[in-house]
Image (cartoon, rainbow, N blue to C red; front, side, top):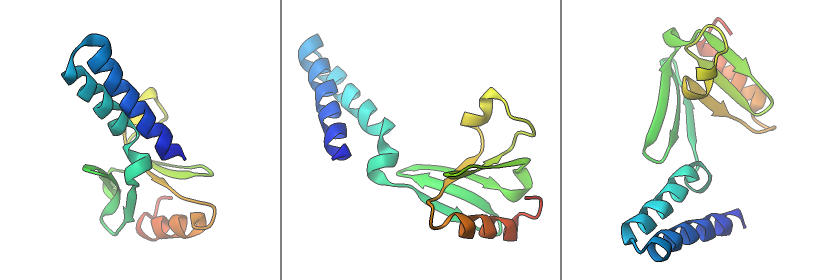
Length: 120
C-alpha cells in the first residue's frame, strides 16, 4: 500500500512540474526526486559485515567503513551505527554506516559485529 502512495507522489510531482510550470524537464526532475528519496523503501537495502568492515547498499549507493576507521558504536532498538566521529555531533547523520535490523536478528547482528570489532 505504501508503494502506491510513493507512485502517486511521483506522478503528482511529475504532473505539477510538467503541467503546472509547462516544463517536461521539471516533471521528470520532480518524479526522479521523489523516487530517489524513497529508494530505500522500494529497492531495499543490503547490509554486510565482514573481517574488513561493514557496508550498506541501496541501489547504486554504497556506504562502507573499515573497522580501523570506527571510533564509536551506537546501538539502538532498530539499528547499529558505526561512526568515524569520537563524539556525537550534528554530522552523525552524514558520517558512518547504519546497519538496520529487526527484532529477530538484533542479537546475531551484534554478535557478528563483536566478532570482527573488538572495541564494541
